[in-house]
Length: 397
Image (cartoon, rainbow, N blue to C red; front, top):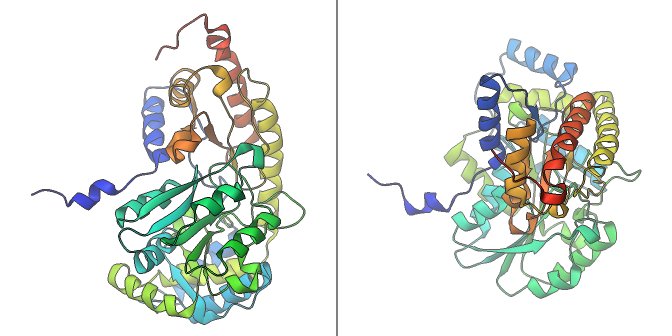
């Protein structure tokens, strides 16, 4: 028996491959600082855990509505309305197990073979994976360091065609930490206003931002509200990666299709985790505020340290918890350098090309680790940087 050919079109997330290699080194007694995995290193806030425990005690252990518990959808609609300055309705909300279904389900519902989907590159690998899986044409939108890893609007205009079905936006962004400025979003919205295409706005890192003003959302422009699918969730904001709970906010005609796909795949999202989600959105936000403040402290110190490493150039990310230094100055290919840092320095990180070909010459570090560990990682890299300064010694594994 052979696998269906379409399985060969699926990509993976290299972070988990690097994690396996790092764990293997640790099993040999090696010390490894883990900067490869993109999840907060903070505990889920206590009041959210207590809400889940209470839900279990109260019997929230059975099937729930496919679209999500009404109380949670109401809380999400109120939260999205408040944070994006719009009037979202519970009928527009779909609760799903994690954020990825809101990539997969809308694409499967909207995209035909041969359609074009514009997506950020470097970007979350699952975007391109899903586009290819559905037989559509992936159209990479290069993110430029010189523009804070935002779009070149002239190039974006040129990439739009009559076959463009979906444009994917991600701000704050993985892997660069870039934030799309409001003026750029407005220009993107104007370019799309009269086109027959949708926007998938991945705002999963929307609350992890370091500017005084929250990041802009394309939903702020009234004509985009019927053309936008908002992807958000609890994993990053509330350190709930293992709880597997995300949501989409979209036009009601698309909700019908997403519900059908949920029925055919997951039936529903776990009921007791949804009760915890209500507590997350409506309860105290102090833990989130402290987490973001600590991420800012780490960002400032870690990026400063990276910029002191010969051959590294690291822009200060505006959001998320990733540093994305340009390492072309080392004279070593980023993939080789990332392997070298793991094997020789015990610092686990990701080759930027794992996020698309425009990520070449970059490395992604997650600073979701303690400040002492981050500073230790910088010192380890500095210590071995003599191996590429002057190129007097070949890299060895």
